[in-house]
Every structure is written in structure tokens, then in C-alpha cells.
Image 1 (cartoon, rainbow, N blue to C red):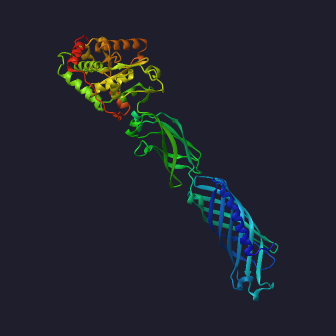
Image 2 (tube, rainbow, N blue to C red; image 1 turned 90 degrees about the horizontal axis):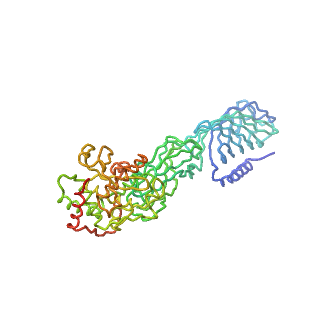
Image 3 (spheres, helix red, strand yellow; image 1 turned 135 degrees about the vertical axis):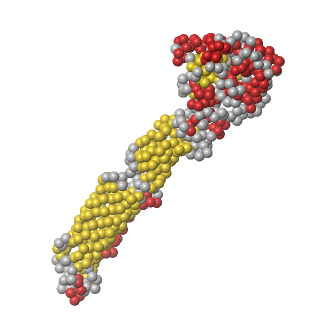
Length: 558
């Protein structure tokens, strides 16, 4: 077999072109490397008696490698090695001092990970070599002008590969290489050191971090500020990179309803092929309160992390169901409190005008909070408020479940002049809170209604009121009001509300619960909401008609 340098280069570049086929696989890594080569020659046989007594070789090689699997690579390389010779060599008086050898090889690399950055590496290769050297005629006893030899070579290397960055590797190895020809055998122990660049990581890196939502709760607009510190879902993050990732900062961003991304959690490390779960939080803005129907919002889970020292970013697209502004589930009865609001002008004006009429007609010796509560109740009655059972969205059908209910804001109930038990309770609590009177929701099986705080301690209240109408909670005395009895008057509503409480408590104490509105506000990070609405005029009852009904109720026994 005889190949000259030109034919050698042709074969080598043909191998390179063939290797590009592996690039069709998107997962394949492509590396280009350069190495310094040295070592020492072993005893060589040389029938031409021209290549004996070679000194330490020095050389370099370039390598192209495709890695279809994380533990396996296919490479093609080409190199040049120069050997000096001792002075008594045939070449000692040649014009070119030493021997030059060109090599081309195709081989396999096998990798075994020790650490994220460190791999053990073994190379197995075979190829061709060419020796082409012009001799000095005076010392050429074989009557040759040049040595022009080509043959087969094979070799093995063992060493380590250190990943400096995702795109840059350092290689160190020791090996054995044999070049064979019928006229000579040239064998070396080799030492190699070099760098290789992962072309895809350097110029077109592909993120291999993925994720999916493992749980997702509905997003209710009235709780928009609560989600800032409370999770509405969980995302599972999978690390598909070939190394661990560190300092993972997880953010959530929904451009439609958020002004900026919200930091959720920091994970110190996610190992290769590991999945971690992160709870999602968000700082939604008040634009959610414009929603009149459910919207599946496009959002992103954003990951910022480090991989082998390089900062990288990944995004996971998700869809989040954002419900209409009136939607709420009854998994927690305290949630009704977030609909209580005194911000809208209609509710505020109604309460303030009734307050003025009551203040000028307060009865001395009667509890002031009771008189204001009675005045608001009677004003609602005279306004023409109606208790309307909603067959499609009743509290009794949804209590304790994740089913979605429709709750009216106070201004909506005033406008519609009607609502079910939860709507009327929300309106009445809103009016009380507007006047600075603490309110509460009472729940009994299948029903919700209201209570107001007397402003007295238990001992003080028992000296003023009949114990039959008092509920003691949070060291305060409360009076229940069955707001759905709007047509029967304040006194009857108080008596009936107390009977409902006693009946439920007699069956099981946990069946009768009272939830002070302000305590619930603290639980749900309450911000008084004022959704967009159409302006309308609230008709205040005439003073004469109102005061007649008011005095009739407050003069009854309590």
C-alpha cells in the first residue's frame, strides 16, 4: 500500500464530510479540537536503515468529533509529527533535519462521568500515515532520493476530559501508537494535551430544561394580591442537561395580568435527570377585575441558572385559567370577606347617608352599633332589596367544594336590588365596615349570613343585651343578623339568626362557625377591590319613612 501526502489528505477530508451526517441528529454534540502531541519513540525496526535513533517527537493534531450519545463519540483527526535524530543517523547531514510524519485517523471515544466537569476517556482509532522526506545524496547508501512511505496505523489513548465551560473542554491523555509498513514499524508512547470546542454549545446552544404543571388552582381576580404569597399551582422542573444545574431562580410571568415577573423560589441544585417541584406565586394587578368571563391566560415559568459556571435561561410556557371577577369557590368560607368593599361610590354614599340620619336620631341608652346596624338593615328593606335564590349558583350547593360560585360585589347587589344569601351578606358587611363597625360571616350547614360586633366585651355585653342574642368570638360580643329576612324587619332577623346558630351548634359545635371579616382580610392579604362598573344612582329612602321604620325596630327588646 502506497499513499502520498495528497491522497492522504483526500481520504482524511472525505472522512470529515462523512461525519457531517451525524449533524442531522439534533441531540448530537459536535466538537472541534486541537492538541499538542509528544512522547517518546520505542525501539523501531527499519529495513532501510534510515529511520533509526529517533528523538522525542513533537507535533500537533486537529480533530473533528461527533457525539451521538453522551458516552460515545466518533472522530476523525489529522496530525503532523516531527522527529529529530541522533548525529550518527543517516539523516544527520540531510538538508532537512529530522523526519516528518503525517497521520489521519478515524476512531471511537468512550466516556465515563466521574464528576459534572470530569470524564474518563478512552480513544480507539485506526488510520493511515505518510512519511515523505528528501535525503542528502552524499549520505544515502540506499540510493534513494526521498523516503516516500505510506501505511496503516492504529492506537489507543486513555485520559481525562475536563469541562471548563459547557462549550470548552481540556483534554489530557497518554497512549500508544503504531505505524506499520513492510519496510518499517514506527511505534510511540504518546502524550497529548489540548482543547476542544463544542460547536453547538458555543454557537447554537439548545436548552434541555423542561417542565409541566403538576397542579393548578383556578385564579380568582378578587384574590389577586393574595397570590403574591400563596401558591396557585406547582410546576415540575426536569433537568435534561448532561450536568447538574445550580443557583436555579424560578420566576412566574403572565404579561396580560402582571407588570413584572414574580420570583417564586430558589433551588440550589438540580442534578442531571432530576425533577424538582416549585410552588408558583404571582403578583397579579387589578386588570384581572375587568374580566367578565373566564380567560386562559398565556404565561411563562422563567428559569435563570448556572451550568458549569455559565449563566443560562430557560422558559416553560403554561396556560393559567383566570376566572371572571365574580367567581369564587367555597373551599374556605372566609373567602367571602374579599368581596366586602366600601370603595365603590354607591355603597359608600348609601352607608354614609344612612349614618347621618341615624346619628341625629340615636336613642340614649341603646348600643350605638346596634342602632346603626338596625338603620342599615331597615334602609336596605326600604330600598326594595329582595332575597333571590340562585338555582345555578347557590351557597348550599357549593359549600365546602371547589365548584365555582358567582358572588356579587356590593354595588351589583344595590343595582340589581337583589341577591342570594351570600350576595346580601356581602352587601350588609360592606355597609357595616363603611361605618367602621366590625362585621362577620356566620355559616351553618347549607347557609351563610351575617353578624356585627357590639363593640363590647363579653361581660359588658351581657349586662346590656339578652344572652339569647349574643355570640362570643375573639373575646368580643357579636349579634347575628339573618340578612335574608329582609322583609321581616331587623329584630326578627336577629332572633331568627340566633336560632339558626343554636340549632347548628346543638348538632355539632363545628357546624356553626363565625368568621370576623377583618380576620379573614388578614388571612387573604385583603385589598379593598373596586372593579369597573357602570354608574347609577342609588335611591336613598326618605328621611321620614326611614326614621319611622328605624325607631320601631330599635325600641324593641334585645
